[in-house]
Image 1 (tube, rainbow, N blue to C red):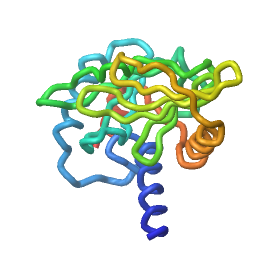
Image 2 (cartoon, rainbow, N blue to C red; image 1 turned 135 degrees about the horizontal axis):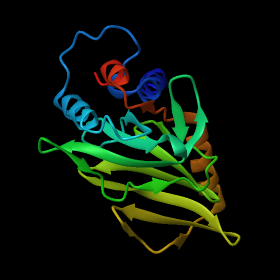
Image 3 (cartoon, rainbow, N blue to C red; image 1 turned 90 degrees about the horizontal axis):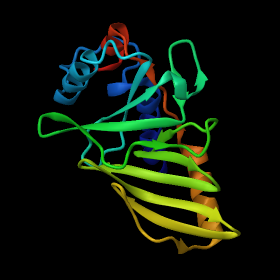
Length: 202
């Protein structure tokens, strides 16, 4: 059972690292799914938008790849063909359209902390803790665990709504932060070019 769980986590990390559809650079002969076609069309229409980057992350409860967008000016780190970033907005494919994910226009706590993905979740570093999110329909949902004024707290997020913070024991927060550190990897974003769309939107 443990081996199956580890393999599942490895698969999710490969998807988050290599871009939309889990493309690893090898030729993909399978037909492109409707969400990938929609995302490609959406990005093609924005081909002239300066400095736009994209990625796909497997964080939807419905199993649909979620399109993440950012700009190069928000880069935490730049690689040869990709960046990690401290700001993003999410789009999802629903009812045949590319729609905004409510509550997903967000920043990490500083311009040096990148967004992470792993185990089917998006991990967002926040001051003193971490936020753990999924996408349900067209809404960002999840919980934030943080330390505020020597008190550990948690609150839930549903779209743009937040619950009131509640006290939680320090061990729970520390364990969740450690889990994110061990299972999640930085989300890689690729510049919105024709070549990158063809390579990563499969």
